Image (cartoon, rainbow, N blue to C red; front, side, top):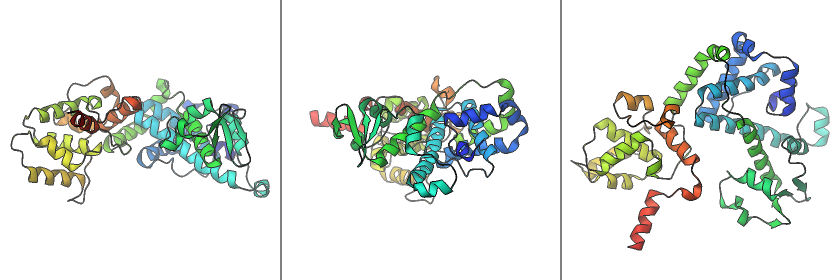
Length: 358
């Protein structure tokens, strides 16, 4: 097991190093608390701050923590956990390989083994799809579309890229971003997988800890899309009650307000929604929403977790996805992720279109 393997545990040769050492994963999780603790740190840090934490000083611990982390992610089996973990591993690798790519040949000869761009391209079967033009790179359009699919910004759209002879021109920096995406694909591949009961039993405390973290945090990226048909059942029900002018208990009003704030609605838009509610007062409602948002208070309140929604009786009409989700925002994010972007029609934009047609 070499330091390079620990820095890039997703590489084929890193996996081969673990196999060559005849490591028994069951024995590791049962007897090596250091590896398990580092694995837990990888996943928990991915959830809370988008990193994989600080690497362990011992190569063996750092490398073996990667397969154990994948086991933990599989046992938790929550979409957002899997996504955040894969992103964090990809980000960590990106930071490392971009730094190593910039290291001069002279320095490389006197330092630890490093990874170069040619090796990384070969790792993902991209060597023949990418060519160096001297002032940048060309990548075959099929490979480009696969790796650029999740990139944000119009500049990544194929229609806005120089295209010739079935190849797309990219800068070195852009190619690095595409390689980061290839790593994310590699990490995500196969997750979650079935974990033997003997291993799962040894990791009960770690899984409980991760589930606790998931339930307490607002796990979504910054969302600014309002698509009511994708709301979790609990929020659909509360929104329906609001629109029918039915009375909502304080905890129910709090839950729907925090949710609507969390998905990007402004105070004005939320106040407009609540106008049909019995006892509506614009000034009081606006104050309450601004207070929840953190504009008039020191705290920005988050949407209650599913466990809290259940305790107050606001968890209703559970569906299959609810069984795998611990937070309403997590439910909504997965629905957003699973829906083609072209099919995402923002409720507010839809309303504007209707007014324009009228």
